[in-house]
Image (cartoon, rainbow, N blue to C red; front, side, top):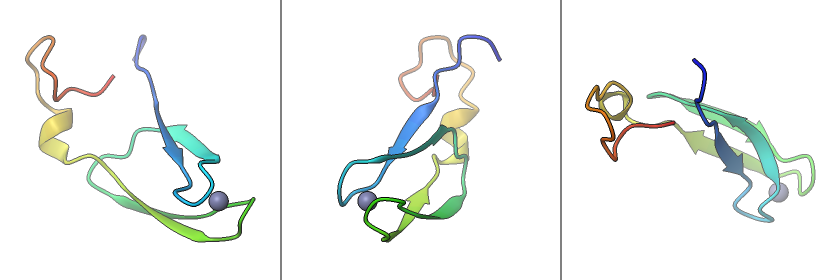
Length: 61
Ligand SMILES: [Zn+2]
């Protein structure tokens, strides 16, 4: 998908960048390399992703 801008998922404790990507309707558990905290990241609701309307504010990327 050209032109897709990935979302940045950051640690809520120290704002370190954990990873970039797009999570759809899912949860990921990541351990921050810096502060060693477990962080649970929640994905976007799937209906936001599949909105087909051009320039819809709910679309990602
Ligand atoms: Zn951290």
